[in-house]
Amino acid sequence: MAEHEHEHVRVAVIGSGFGGLGAAVRLRREGITDFVVLERAGSVGGTWRDNSYPGCACDVPSHLYSFSFAPNPDWPRTFSGQEHIRAYLEHVTDVFHLRPHIRFDSEVKMMTWDPRKLRWEIETASGRLSADLVVSATGPLSDPRMPDIPGLDSFPGKVFHSARWDHDHDLRGRRVAMVGTGASAIQIVPAIQPQVGRLTLFQRTPPWVMPRVDRAITGAERALHRAVPLTSRLRRGLLWGIRELQVQAFTKHPDELGFVEQLARRNMTRAIKDPALRAKLTPDYRIGCKRILLSSEYYPALARPNVDVVASGLREVRGSTLVAADGTETEADVIVFGTGFHVTDMPIAERVVGADGRTLAETWKGGMEALRGASAAGFPNWMTIIGPNTGLGNSSMILMIESQLNYLADFVRQLDVLGGRAALDARPSAVHAWNRRVQERMKRTVWNTGGCTSWYLDASGRNTTIWPGTTSEFRRATRQVDLAEYEVLRPPADGGPHRAGKSRDAGTSEAAAGKSKAAGKSEAAGKSEAAGKSQDAGKSEAAA
Image 1 (tube, rainbow, N blue to C red):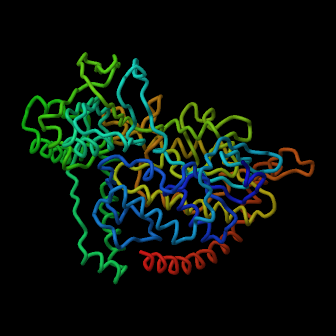
Image 2 (image 1 turned 90 degrees about the vertical axis):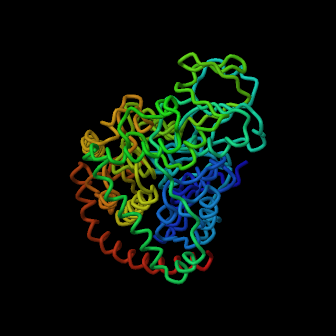
Image 3 (image 1 turned 60 degrees about the vertical axis):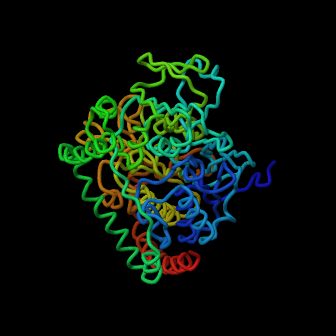
């Protein structure tokens, strides 16, 4: 069982999606090679490995949905399909020589902080190990949410979630029920509509849908990007800039989104001629409150003769009969759930046990919160990528991930400056202060005022998912670690638990003393990183 039992590493990264692979690359650039990436599956890719349903694609332009340090001049389309993104992540894994660090089939069962040894004890499916620092990059879109539908167990047909698509089950001629109208559903519906016998869409809330202006990227464009990498960077910069300019409407002036609503209504009107169907598909909340979806095929598919839209959620299952909340009954052979993921109640939180013996799930029972989206109080030397309030409603999450990687890099540098056995634990006051500022800014955003209920909100109605600002603001906020926001932990002579710095001021003083050293080290590391960046970019282009 335990090929790696009792092993100790400096850093353990959980997950091999964008966040985990990005963390691995950044650690190598910081000169750290004593790390492992723990992956529960047998290959890299995260959500882009797990979501392989028909029509699966990204709704962020390809050149923006990729690492800045690993540009891909050969994206085949302006909006990439799942297979292209997964291939890109495999490519990044190979170009940056990450495979020797990855432990596949190593799902994390439990992570427990040892306050005496100042390290994490980790139990995985392939054995045990310990680590000084844990980077949790499991992502919010990793564990599917299946609704508790009475009678579902009695359904005689096939049932699966969009993120666990059964490719062996033939849908041709079948009566298929699609439950949900989120980003996955609007891609699945047009992809399977031509082949199924009957398609019934259970729609609890209609989404706002804008056209997806997708096209093939020409060979000439790709050749230009390969020959002149600056053109690819300019393309990325333009895509980023447009989205940065849009943020004000989402965060400060939701009324300005009225014009976008008009465009979305016209998009619907062009494809949906039936007034009754159009009424079913028209949202009653401000556009942007839920994620704006992109599709040019969704509405035309719903207008086809073999598609029915039930403007109600699925209430119960009676054998092969599906009963909606409004009483509508439908016969089905297959049920596909496009019902999202455990975002505000991530299962990984139940497997992380902190300094006081409580799990992260227990700590976050009243709502997720983490300092700068990364550090939770009571969980020393533990960082999360795509943590609380780091999501976006209109741009690329890769931008946020790279900002958090900057924070991770400086976190490691600060530990080096402190020297010896040390750990950093976010102060509760700093976590709460950060969260208060975020939630105060959230009050005027469209996600809180738009009149909808979305997966951005937790059980208490608080938005613990979205970042209420620009990606530039977040990058500035995570440029470096402020040691005044952390307590420095040291192991005492007797080996018992101990918080360094006889007082908080002493701990802060120790941190401040190291700041100047850190600055010099950071500058040197920056030069090293710049050199590595050029070398890695060259490798990336050559491999591409």
